[in-house]
Amino acid sequence: MSNNAINTPIPFTPYQKLAIAILALTQFTVILDFMIMSPLGDALMKSMELTTIQFGIAVSAYALSAGVSGLLTAGFADRYDRKKLLLFFYIGFIVGTFLCGITTNYPTLVAARIVTGLFGGVIGSISMAIMADLFPLQQRGRVMGFIQMGFGASQVLGIPIGLYISNHLGWQAPFFMIVALAVIILFVIIVKLNPINEHLKIPQEHNAFIHLWNTVKQRDYRVGFTATALMSLGGFMMMPWGSAFSINNLHITVEQLPLLFMMAGIGSLVVMPIIGRLSDSIDKFTLFAFASFFLMAVVVYYTNLTPSPFWVVTLVNVLMMVGVMSRMVPSMALTSALPNIQDRGAFMSINSSLQQMAGGVAAFIGGMIVVQKDNYSPLERYDILGYVIVGISVVCMIMLYRVSKLVKAKPAPKIVVPVAPALDDVI
Image (cartoon, rainbow, N blue to C red; front, side, top):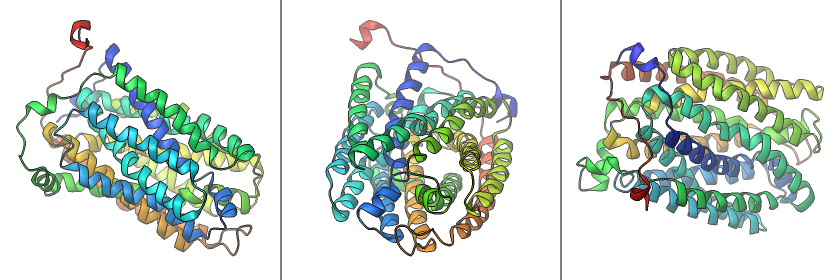
């Protein structure tokens, strides 16, 4: 596959724009549900008197259950209309999030996070499969840029609002907010998204588990799986402790915390479309490598930061978020180009599962590395996390370079741009 074939931009059709909006809104709620645990971390740890290891387990519960769910459903992911799969798991996600809102103790919180992860963790892989079905590689960088804006939007709007509600109504209130928003989005999916079933026309293995095994055993796919797992392993080690580190180490107040997350989210919203366009215009691995070196420098500085003015802490958080997003877009766009169409659902499910499980393991390991004498003391050994993340990032660059070579070696795909069906077909 030549560089010209990969990097030639293609305009979006009106229906593609609608699909991007639906996927972005869906991702917004799922990401917000997961990300809200980090800013609520300090309040949760103090409210339930949790240790760093216990909180790490609460975070890991979602990620590990999501990983297991993804593996169990991977063999079936290419056997159904992707819209129906999205609806099924999104409804389960809403139920799980509601359970998080009504929990009153640590055991039920962990149980509710497991239920939410079983359903919510699969939604990302379904969205990626839908993206790969509806958009050729020449559009996926921009699509990923818009979809991942849900990450930034969750910080600009969701997390600050959630923290504000939490400060006044308790830490459970943000979960009810997510449920209310998700129900609205569920209705939009039902009404506006068309069936996505072209992959069903291609013959597949009769046994779902054979399909899963045949996907896992492909060497090229395993390179992509490893790169994704390493990306998640590095990021999840540090993320759960963001609010506790900001409050107890950097002396940010609880009232300043929503603004801190909002500013970091604004940075993501600004940079996402730019990175998406760059990813469709220049070599994706080159962009990933530059972003990785930038992020490594910021992470080392941040994890060694001492009490600082609020504007310094905010600037560093913005730069760190820009680095994270600038790596995510080109890496996911490249990885999505590895599977063949008949394997996309299984590949994305396995890929998402490994990402989630690696994140769960990383959060647990992070909880073992970081030490806090009591819920009001500074976090200790946080700097060690930064150095570990740098080492993982170097290995991740090597693996994604291999992914890039594999993608470029593939024959150029036939470009089919979907359009909205006629009104009679919808009815």
